[in-house]
Length: 516
Image 1 (cartoon, rainbow, N blue to C red):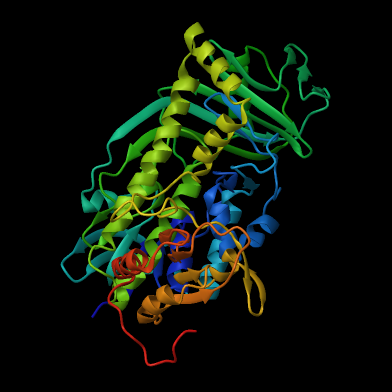
Image 2: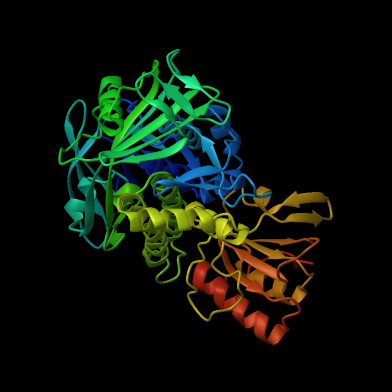
């Protein structure tokens, strides 16, 4: 017997999201966090992309919007020293919520507590071992050391993950010399703000909004209704402690070095410092030890890592629960590595492209940035890049035959008509259960799904523009299988049976009335 089913190491966004999702699946994890109190060191300043859709599907996006400083900021995002401006698109492929990471963690922790997770703060993992049946964890607690066992352990303990190191999982990659300092400050009286967003300061003259490159680094800023957002990027050899706060003086000195003159800065609202690393764990699973979030990947650009890590957790939770409950088909837990290593690779692709845009300082590099900006004037290119940043372009590689084009993609939020009125895919996904969605009144397919009704909810509905005759949607809102419009039963039925078996285990025909 083990003390608990799952131990999560790290109470950051990935660890807390995993705790939330496991609780929804009926598993009550123990979260071990080495810091005695929630950290207030400024880090990420927002969440965005595909994770917003998932949070909306869980019915909790409004919590994050309420806790943030701006629930609907303009869709204009930095990308490798330039900006991807999606404000001209009617439906932007990339959206964000401006919310400090400390507030994101607070919202997730509150929900974890509501759902029944146990969060132990001030408990540091100092040793890990595993065998075929359990993981044993040595912990240095606030009062005494102790040992706890679990069936699985998930390392969500950041880029310097002790769990990854103890498991012996290689973490190859590159550390770049860029040191980035970011500040949100009040606009002082000495700085003039023009209507087009430009600023002027004594000794500096007029500075255009956006990015200013010098031979000493890059300076960027934007003025909003609640202050000025600014950043610097310099190449340095110094090592910085991520937990050591940055001072306003440090930011001011960096601005002075890059611009060659002092820029007056008002009272600080938020300050942070970070470096860029390009690393990915060779494997996200080693026996009963798994990795998620920054412990699994570090990206050489901002605005992506937190969202990617939370989505790791959503993918992992239901698969862990299936294994713990004893019905997981063979290899289900291994698909966590397959799918999320692939997603991490896509994130690395676009952030590495940002490195190429950002770091070049010769005329050829400047020409590349100019051409890139010109391409983004075209809507298809802007949408393509926006989806890449958001992670909404991810389609997990199919486990079997190629099948429908929707297989592996995130389920669209269709408006659905039922016998009792109107609902949506988002509302159906709130319990985080798999759904067989019959969109074309296919009794032949509903009959197949009956054998899995103890695990998969069957819903018969209609929709105005149906993308398929039926959709099999996993708890993480990705489509496991889809039937093409008017696909004959002799091909659709065996394909559905195969998909149900592959993702949701052996059929068990329950003794209940037939589904009409």
